[in-house]
Length: 87
Image (cartoon, rainbow, N blue to C red; front, side, top):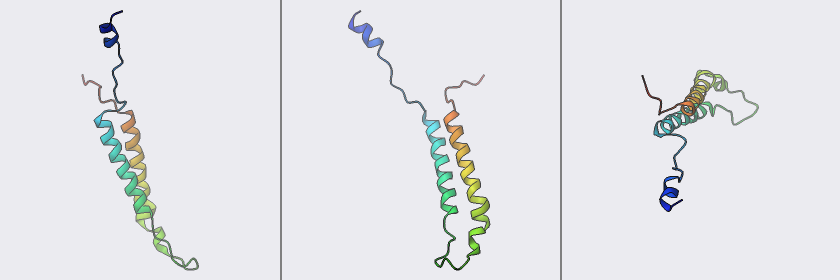
């Protein structure tokens, strides 16, 4: 076996994901971060005082929905095959 044959057989290094996958992953992480940021806060400085702000729409409905959407986008980004050819 000559040197030329060895060079041709060298494995080609390639990333597992492509640019499109990483773009969707970044979008999913942004949704997750926004959901967790919206979920934070609403507590009280005094533990003996109840603050009803903890049960508002933003913390109960909007933030968990954004987190679930972000997780869905992450799963889509992992399963996305950018090399798939359309017929």
